[in-house]
Length: 325
Ligand code: FES
Ligand code: CO
Image (cartoon, rainbow, N blue to C red; front, side, top):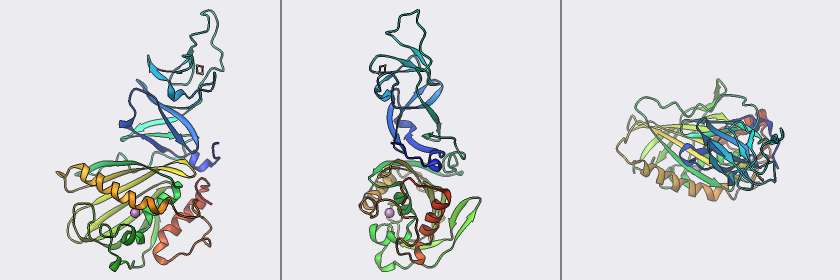
């Protein structure tokens, strides 16, 4: 059943990597709603994954002559969702006007396919399509996690887990103190001051440095960080976009931009992120309660958790109910 979280229904969500959508429809789930996503010469499309004839998922069908053809009795739907052909219908009979698929907003941009179930409340997240000059970009994931989207996002924003969950890589338990930092807001984006963390292996290439983190929150399930260090002019930007599948399952898409190590194969960074995600998985899939509590009295907070607190407050202001308690 679809959750009536109008805030998230009116957001764009990444449902597939562009590279994952070939010439067959794909089944995806967004906010509990099953969708058939497919490609025609006019672009990408997302339909409710249900044929109105006998309720078979349209994602079981195929693309033929630029239309989506249901696997069961061959009804053919054009990109606007109108049924244009019913093979069993005698030629002189009109196609019933109710023979339609339910269509959702769907666009392809910057390596991802995005869907909005309602009326888009804002443009696509600012993270894609902006590659600063001299930066190299790599997608990581998708990572499927048995956890609520806001739990996954908050884990990304949590600086004090680095020394424990990612010990030896992103932190060292002997250097776990976090200096106080502020969270500011500018143009609707939450942003931290620089937070310094000693990292034995900051990015998978084996460099031990004091990293400076600046975190940003762009939307309910879209966040990023920029990392610089004390030993180089390297800039490392990492974005997280979470697809809320159900309240207990999410898919994390990550995009990394860097202005260094151009010759390093992308696989080095992807494998490193794979390792980090498996470490995070153990935490986010076991947190209780499963839904992120927005009542600030519900858990115990420290100053180092300022960003998590700001994120929870913001989710409450946005009115996000899916994946929160
Ligand atoms: Fe789709 Fe019959 S169920 S054509
Ligand atoms: Co982590």
